[in-house]
Amino acid sequence: MPDSDALPLFVACLPGLEELVAAECEALGAHVGRPPRVGGGGVACRADRAGVVRLNRWLGCASHVLLRVVRFRARHFAEFDKRVRAAPFAEWIEAGACVQVRASSARSKLYHTGGLAERLRNAVDAGVPGLRWLGPDDEDDAAVVVHVRVFEDECFVSIDTTGRPLHARGYRLATAKAPLREDIAHALVLASGWDRSSPFGDPMCGSGTIPIVAARLALGLPPSLPRRFAYEHLVGFAGSGEQEHPAEGASLRIAASDRDAGAIAAAQANAVRAGVGAHIEFEMAPLSAAPIFRGGAATVVSNAPFGLRVGSDPGRLAPVYQTFGARCRYLGPGTAVALLVADRRLGLRTGLPLRSAFLTNHGGLKVRGLVGAVDDALAGSA
Image 1 (cartoon, rainbow, N blue to C red):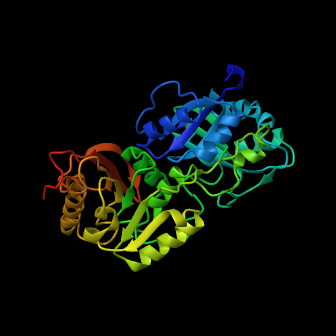
Image 2 (tube, rainbow, N blue to C red):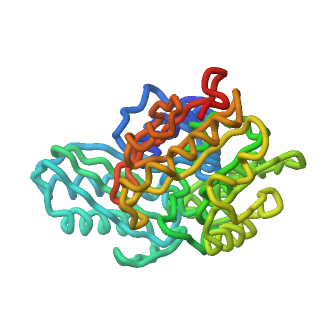
Image 3 (cartoon, rainbow, N blue to C red):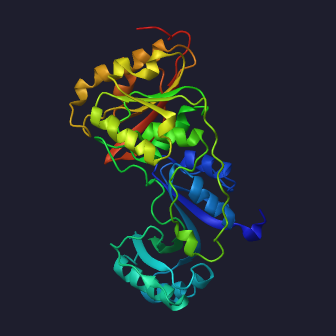
């Protein structure tokens, strides 16, 4: 990619998922200049226009792809107004686009975010003709959102090329109790090391997010259903992407089960909407009799009950984790495990050699992705 074609980007994600997002960006052809700072909420990288389209369509652990337009220092609003009006918005935003502005500020004299947003809107409106403006609470999947973030008088102006967040995949209309965000599910599947062809299962599948993510990965499908993106209203991005070619997946075995009949019904409906209903075997079953535990070595990935999120006493959840660990051990050597937990001590009750793959936020809680494998010493042990 010639330097002249490389655009400065910031790929936003949940804090804690930066390393997984960086690996995804590199696999999709973006250049990540230095290791991401864990907890920074994103990854700085560079890509051409086709790369921006590719990132939006194929990233699974990220939420937005931001194009960095301009960066400058300003200590008062007159200086901010002058500098932001010089930004080349017409080089990026098409005339007549649907646009919103958002502003944030920390540790700066420019602390009034309403004043920042008003001046940013005036600058964009003066630079690009015929814009359709949305209010701060209005929604449009493909709206172009122009951000200004001020930190210690340093102003960063970016354009969101994504629109609706990438973790909103478009297929999960039915939910069970405490649904898992799709980007966290994607991160957990990637962290498990699954080869996308060997047996895979989730014995506590809820609304089916984890097995659906796994099936779309194995079939070579984009994380989201077909949708609109904000880049469609940016200059030079139309028609920049390539078409996907789904794999056959004839030998794919993904087992999903839950003890709750309503959860299974929701998961099946979501899988059909996601186009993978024929590739996932759903069954209502308790954890101890989950179908993934009836065969040999497999990859077992699950979002364990958190207690606080599902209304149960965390102290009463230990048997769930003990059963999960025992059933995984009986699958034998070569079994890989990934488990999302809110309490690491409960994860240890599995008796499995689990290590932390990531720590992030979900539903107001800190959650940790634990990963590990069953070896010869553990196989079959009680």
